[in-house]
Length: 72
Image (cartoon, rainbow, N blue to C red):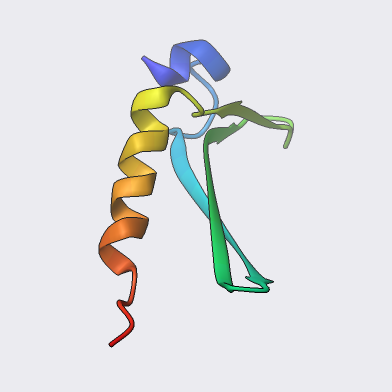
């Protein structure tokens, strides 16, 4: 289905990309997560589609919460 939305029958199979940004804050560290789907067209152009709906954001946040280190 995703290939129909951002590519065509000649493009590469779509892949999901996940990007984490880690930034220091006065009270610790803040982590942002972004996700998108991309495919490469026959001429080399890369088409992307952000995956920024609430369901996807909640899944990413749950994963980050599980990685959170608790202070003792």
